[in-house]
Image (cartoon, rainbow, N blue to C red; front, side, top):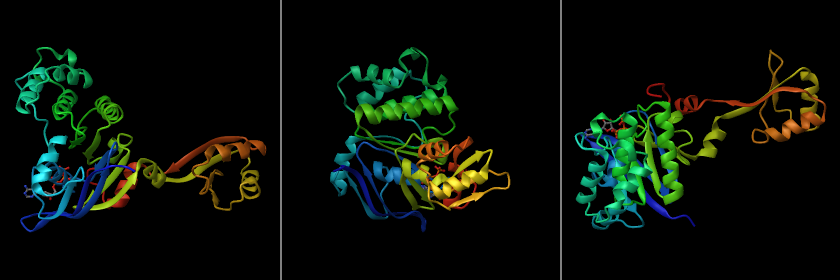
Length: 307
Ligand code: ATP
């Protein structure tokens, strides 16, 4: 049975009479990477702040590692690391000095953790360079190292890939996957950009105007975006005959350009390919087609802003 790391129940946070979060209930299980996706102002930071204890809910409750109640939560929060809004780094210090500062502030005696973490996030060679001279990606990686200083079981990262170039995104993605695989850390990571976070997370929580719109696994997300198999060949008449007689489906449409959209067998492309081949159909194209992640996200939250 999977272990529940975080459970929120009917979480509501109101600022000046306006709900930043409304009746939000989610469960985060151990060893997964959760992508928290929502437009600007959706409530991502607010949720993360409440879980991390940087704010209090107006109503509703939070359970951490199976414990509830403010006193117990305070204790359990020692088991989480976070980077919310900005990396907690001092610009005039080097990467190592930043880690030393946080190690001492957290009362961690093990000096070796500084070099271990620098190596883990790929900043071992930054020497005397001050954090203010780091690239955005380096700053984000240093921020993650700071969040990891107390060896947390839950890591909360607010928009760590926002503004990074594609290489920076890949670096953070690989880092998070290693954290999950090598250290079995549960990760909650937010972004306003679904495609940017695609494949970083194992599970997605889509939040809109303070409410959960949908929670789904990576496989389900991919399934939601798949619409049809697009098949092209020289002889579409023969193709549809094979679809009907061999694959027993009439769930297809012949398009004006003579390609065929097949709405069944979305997860069995190889099977379709084999059956067509065995029946003498020379296929020139066979691809899964559908919504882009962006289209899908917009269809859920109903608007094109910030995606
Ligand atoms: P972004 O991607 O822009 O960071 P977000 O999804 O993290 O957005 P939040 O920062 O959680 O969204 O904000 C949710 C809503 O709550 C917004 O309408 C915001 O204006 C409001 N809000 C957040 N913090 C405060 C605050 N301290 N005082 C008043 N309103 C706030």
